[in-house]
Length: 168
Image (tube, rainbow, N blue to C red; front, side, top):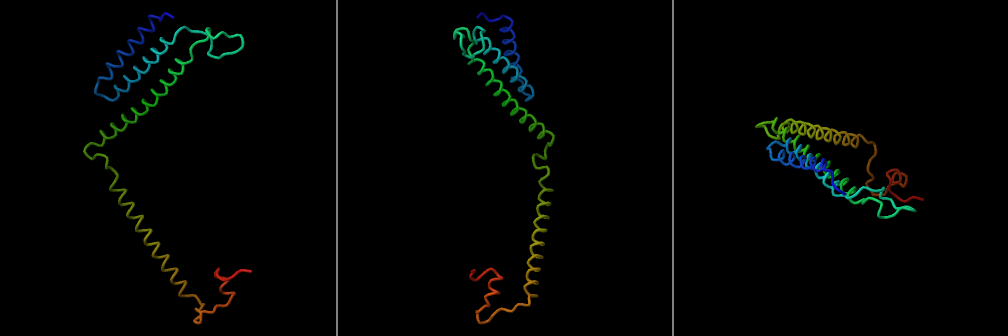
């Protein structure tokens, strides 16, 4: 297959513009340059794939020399997925750097003081409710009309009500 001169020129322009854009200091331009280089790589793989042919499915009456090579198609698909993953990572870095730039000297500790106060109030509420529950249980136990058996011999019915004793 002879490569189309137009595709070779487009690929080289994508590589050149992408690398030149990636040399800038801004993360946005690095992201744009990475996208341009990724598309240039996809065109390079396409140009190197060989002559076009039939779909890469062997069936009855299909000669193996007439089908196109499926490997470059798989490479391009893999390159697209990798390009998407790295693009999403770079977008996350871009957003994070923008967020930290908006904070200025305060840094990453914007809402920590308010969160600590809320956590302390929740903990104090839990401690108060736990102490109130303990007092309520002690009052119920003190108000109970059952008296402990001093001999240690309990009635079988009382033992069965509490869950102890033997079962038939």
